[in-house]
Length: 284
Image 1 (cartoon, rainbow, N blue to C red):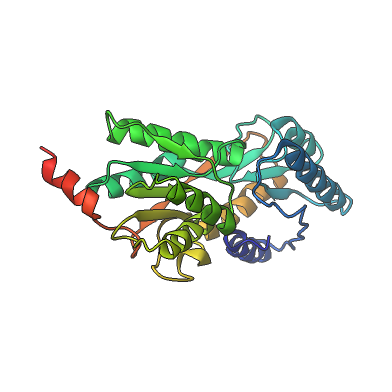
Image 2 (cartoon, one colour):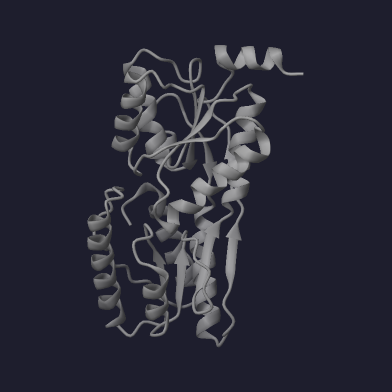
């Protein structure tokens, strides 16, 4: 709830709820460090379930659940058997609850096409895909690379979700001399951390490396260069969540899955690097 991404979603939920004569209550689970450790994941899932059970004590009409993917499908369906539920930004398909998420294939195609248009071929993904909430994004990167860059192997560097994770992972890659010409990061925070690591190493973004973030959160504009990023329509995410809950409250029984369309925001962190310029010159 205190993450830059979710702040605007919460504001949108408040406004949509008020317009429908409803009040919104919020409960936060354990802070998500972004680590993919199995035991930590289950601890966070336990705290999230605990928070949800406390909300249910208020006899609520329904709930929107925005998670890091710690609760599995069966756990969410158990909750939905008690109160109408909308899962936000989680790639679950259920016959019991509704889902609002972003079209990850469109998002990653936009990112890869933009970088390919600048001459980049060695385009890596910085992020982890161990949870449903992140697995879909990694899979979309792999599909986008297969479609747009035939003959070039996709590369995924495992990295958790926060700025510090992007910084540490990129420092390790720089030290190992494994610097690509272009990176798509799983979040803006990870992208910003990578930029800091490059700056400390004397490398320029975008002259040496291009970076695309994801979310269009405040991380994208909190520093130089401003990040090119995938914009997720957060206001629409919140408003759609409320709309689906109101429909359930009014008797809709058929589940609904809504895919929000992302867009590419081009700023200063992408460009034609020296290596990419050579790639453009040799393309037929």
